[in-house]
Image (cartoon, one colour):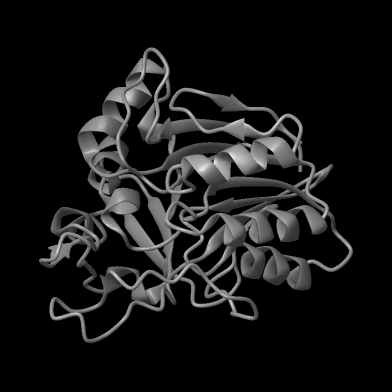
Length: 277
């Protein structure tokens, strides 16, 4: 697949003229289609950054949601509004709409898909494709669906499915976006809650013999011990990836380890355009 373009629309860091926000959204052009991987935390920052970068959200044909957290789904109403009733496909896991909470501050805080985004899923022109397993989006682009766990995931005891904290979130809705190119596969993660090694191995099993070329996105390693981060980076390197572009929830320490292990590794910044591997 040729003609790929990947631009960071929303991220925790920003370069001029964009503004930063906790979340992730990536503009993806592939094979003539315009897609959006996640939408950031709210419609405002997504709309403003797109305008500053000269990117028309009305051109987006499909939104691919990596999981249901607000910082990846909150901007969806902006895309629906920009489409003005024209067809917009949304690909997501069936569990992406579940209520989710964080207990990190001691009291429950809702971190699931915002009400406005859930309502946007039922707006005129929106067509939702539920993807519990591998699902084709278009030529050379697909989502993985649920990731099998053969290695430890990035479990977080503070992230739960009920405000009382009785039900841990196993992140069954966590999925990756895969883009096929002449140099191999680009694997895009929102937060990699299911574990980046599990994601890479699952993609490799689904496309045997096709090299893993590039890893992009958040890896949720910010709270991991140094030894665990080093082991994950070693295992990622063992998969033969040539490029890494990480940010959002990856964590400063993990980003430094990736930069040391992968020459030319990129830290995601709003407004950056990533070159093809």
